[in-house]
Image (cartoon, rainbow, N blue to C red; front, side, top):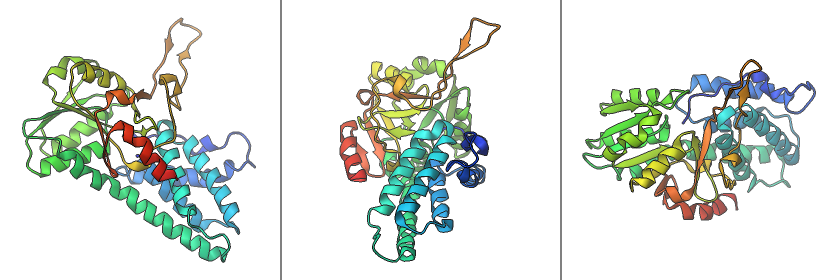
Length: 324
C-alpha cells in the first residue's frame, strides 16, 4: 500500500447520526483501528486495517458466511470513512483481503470450520502484506549507485526501506527530502535517514525545480497504484513528476501490491477524499489544501513492488491477477 503523517480522526466519525445503523455498531472497531495508529506507527495504515478485520472475524457472532461477509463490508466501510487521507490504500487493502479470504471458503461445510479457514487465509494475507516491504527493498536498492543523489517526497516507509537497504549494502549516496507542508512529514523521513548515516538535506516544496539539476533519480511512495499504472500520493508528487520529466530524469514509484486499486482517475478531480475549499464570511479569500494528487503513468519510469519491477502498462495485468 499509501506514507503520510498519521491520520487520526475521532472514533465518532463512524456514527453518522443514527445510533442503530450498521456503521455505528462498528464504533468499537474504528477505535481498535485508530489505537493501532498510535501503538504501531511503523506499520502501514492498510496493514493495521487488515489486522482489525482479522480481530473482527475472531469476535464475530455471525452464523453464516453470507452474514459474516456482509458484516465485514460494514466494518470496511467504517474503517475507510475514518481513514481520512488514507482512504484509497485502506479500501484497496481491505477489498483485496476480503476477496482473498472468501475465494476458497466452502459455505457448504460447518460454519465454525469455515470461519477457521477464513482466519487462516487472513493470517496468510497479512503476512504477505507485512513482508511486501522487505521484498521491495532489494529490488529498489539496485537502482541506487555510489554517488547517486535521490530526491524523495514526504515520508514513505517503503521508500525508507529501499534507501536503508542501499546504505546497509555500503552504497554512498545522498538524499534530498521535501518538507511536505503542512503535514511536515518530510522532516520525519529526513531524521530517520540521517540517523542511519545517510547524508540528507531538507528543502522547501517549492525548491524542487531549483535542485533538480543536481538530482539523479526521484523515488516516491504511493498511496494507491491505479489501473492505468499511475499513482495517487501526497499532494506535490505530480508537480515533482512534471519537473522530473522536463529534466529527463527517472521517476520511480514504490508501493506494495495491496495498494493496487481498481480505480481509473482521468484528472485531479477524480482523486477521492478531497476536502472542498474553505471560505470565511469575513473574507473574500478561500483556502484549499488538497491532501492527494494523481500522477499519470506517462510520468512514471518504473514501479518497484513486491510483485516485481513493473512498467506502468503492466499494472492492469497484475490487477486482473489480484482480483480475478
